[in-house]
Length: 301
Image (cartoon, rainbow, N blue to C red; front, side, top):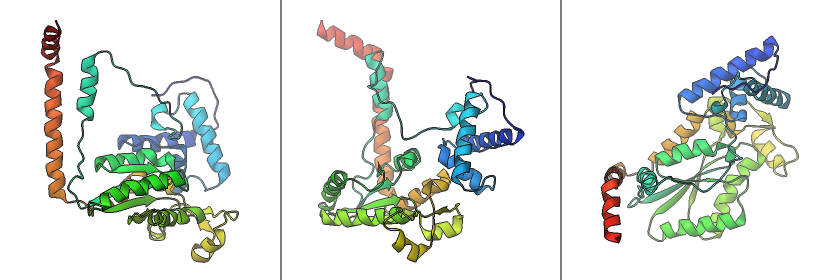
């Protein structure tokens, strides 16, 4: 959806960047992905259209903003995943809420499995991508927003220990930046879960050095002001890499490939079939709502 709210003039170079932004966004929208500004920026860098500098990031942000206001960039192709309005849902009639419930009905597909998996990501800006992969496999997901608070860590340990008490192994798939703090975050999660009595295994599935060498995401200078910089420098050098630089499909693939290693497919197929039976039953209620409502009204009178 392109809507022009303002008239703006652009240089030839700026129009070329806007056209490329539209091309990239359309590519991802076709695959069902909506990009953040930072993800779009890293696509520009990875494709060699921009050098990885803070000035270029700000410039692209300004051009995207002006391009959207001028009706040149689709408003629905980009989103801010960190700021969202929340409100109570409403329905026009009882059958509407039943129809919504019918579509939302789900059972625990992991019931009976010998493992339980959660997906944790450092940045809330990537929540939409993580959610897409996690929902497909009926796994819980969590946005850490940096180092996890003590309250959330304690609650997570109690939750995971409940599974472990039933001889179910617990696993966290962690995704974060490859920088001084990002490397420390996954280790911190493992350490505090152990402190709170959980035997959960934390699998850092991204961003790791072997992936950086294979995928070649654009580097950034590691923050010298980070208290962990010296240790990081000794192991990895003075460059860092952001998880946002990976294409969404790559992130989803990393998550799904790891989840599959913990799944008994036959058992999950049986649970999926049972879920569908429940969905079908609820849909019958929706389809026959008029007669059900009439019967209930007659009973009430």
